[in-house]
Length: 511
Image (tube, rainbow, N blue to C red):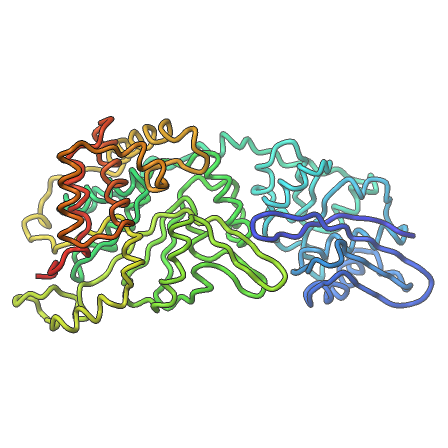
């Protein structure tokens, strides 16, 4: 008897439906074809034990299973449940009438229990698109899949529940989640708050500008000046995610298997890889490509602490994703594109010793050592960072101050207002939502300068020897400063402030 059941494969952040054809004939043998990997080939042992331990059996006949399309590589153990249901239906142990109307995925334990899978949200979206009646999957993944409305999503704990459902012996209630209610359960009081930071008013101003326009920022200062503390608090002043952003972010984390019994993500991601990270772990890839840190930080923050300690080749692979806001991973047989629209926040010491070229510093490095240390970061990478700011140590008077600093909630209100202005401005431009995403065309349209501002910018360009990319970055930052002041035009004050935030372009900035 020939039976068709359906599973799904995830490539990038999109799913592809896999048709599993099970044919049982006279003879003995178990033949699995259609480019399965080793995890799928080993499924016969898991299936046999799981069925036996639940009162069913693997038929002692010739079982041929084809996973179509046959030229597409299938990977992972998530097809166990699909294959088990197909074998039971083809051997007449369960009713086969409704099997083809459902998409079935799950890894089997030897006792018939189900283990979680990756990419449940992408699979659920595809199942709805292709008109499936429902989707069976492990109960640990049910919340992320149930985000998709218009599809019955069944979370199951054991293979017996699925068998009883198709045999009409038992019912399973589909999980229903109100996506909007789930999404709007936001945290008004963040764990890390700017009110904890003493002093550093100019740095907080930079952080506010960076958050308002989605700009990349690098903090340069000696140890203990508060660089890491400030960076960890940046997500607390970013505007809340939109529903579209939340779905995009949840889909990427679902593919990477990082949702862990949670539904829709409503907090912006904050990723902080260690400086020993490889280029593949940062941008994604591998023999079976997985999203890297820059994609897991999509719509959030990627924090690179001690930037010069990262291997140079690791940092250089970020050049193209920083510009294009997506990363394309090419292999011999396929190409995958992951979104990677993130805010880069980097921190670094000005020298190997950690201090400026200062006679009072505990450890001093020679100018040559400092230059060698800074040269670990290439000019093209620094060009792609909009704001460079020096962080100086906090004086004792500020540290002992009892007056509370401004909270993240009040800073976030100003940032959100500025982002709303940008959303209205770019509503007719696809893929552009805030100032940092502007292309050349939008810069020319929305950053028109008067004669005074042009002269100021020309002088800065000549004195600092700035590149054309740095010129665009200054215009983008000045547009954000104007938005925070709710000014329709960019004036010379905005340009002057934006120029100040290019520390690493200035000769002798260490002096």
